[in-house]
Image (cartoon, rainbow, N blue to C red; front, top):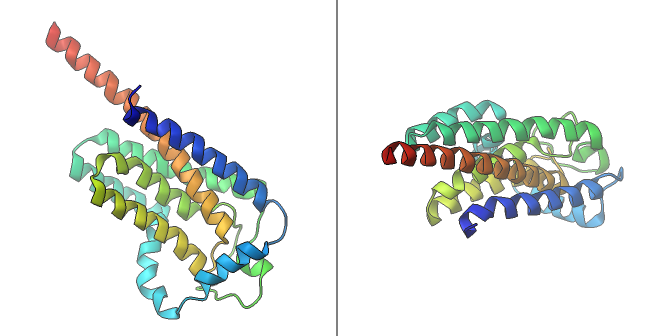
Length: 210
């Protein structure tokens, strides 16, 4: 197996390990001093960031996935890539919902005082669905991009997660866990995509040989 084909396996193993560690750390009904420090580092940033940051944060919203799928198809003209991206994003979103109910961790203002809410948030915190969706999509499209393109998609995914902290939607562990979940489902989508592409290539070569 060459290094490129093996990369999704490494990503899957590493991301599952990170998800497991953050899951265990998020189970206590409290926030550590270190996590609070990281949270306030971003949550205390100036208010003017909210307006330009809000559209970027929506890259992790499930409602935007169809638009991104269309854009991916128009760029590469391969429905398999678009389908893999959509499947990974939906899986990340759905699994995030399941994990939230298993962990039952609240939003930052449930544990901390003097939180800058932009706006007020309801529901559960761990894991961040926005981070899961954004990192799932970045994982799927990254192998098709050059170095500059990779930097852009991973930066946008990271900003999505950091903006969730800035707006007080999530605590840092929620975002890291969500990012790990997104990379995991994205890696699985890449493995399926590799299998489909390999099968199509083999079928084409057989037809040509015949």
